[in-house]
Image 1: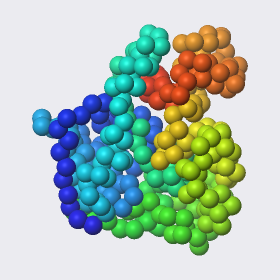
Image 2 (image 1 turned 45 degrees about the horizontal axis):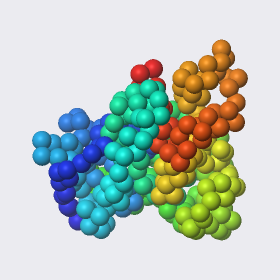
Image 3 (image 1 turned 60 degrees about the vertical axis):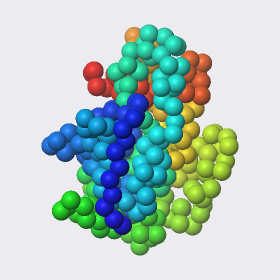
Image 4 (image 1 turned 30 degrees about the vertical axis):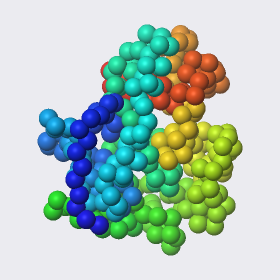
Length: 289
């Protein structure tokens, strides 16, 4: 582990707030200077927009350039994705314009699974608090910029943690789910490290649904926001149901809008880019209220 810096001089589709506040991650926090600091893997990075470009600095397990390119999905052409989506209709055009700087991160699969189980029926500040307590108690310590950070604990780090210990972290009803999912992963009831080799998205989803606390929405978030990178999914929560009804379905009672109808509409309109379309729509509607 060593301190490194990397300046990304030429970039497209990279806005700190759009990336870190669009609902896909929980371990990035804004600093007083409007930069963001986050922990992922064994890395702690601060990301700041400067006059010369995007400056990444921190402690990395491997080369910072390769780490940044991989984690921030910099090899993907988001300009082309935005052009494609903006042509669909005026709603997509407006949402893409609003969330112009979104990039879908390549987040660790295990961390994404546990984080989104914790996110169920929860709010962002509480989710972040629970995850930080989990990391502080069971992760590994990293020092950067005179501050102490903690890695996300691996399954083996949690093998002896009891349901009661999880409860003390404030997990609530999710305590048993985190416990059971950890045991299932350790015993390879679901071999999460082989999921990326499966070509069919529904087959991966069915494997994820075996895990305690993973329903359809959580499974789709895992598929979209982790290294699995399946853009053909369309996670549905209250905000997504609302925006899809307001913009496209137009029922008097949005609660009566079925998930089946939303998924059919998303598939027809957005196809293989459904997941990214969902992020633009979700972020646009949630931020504007």
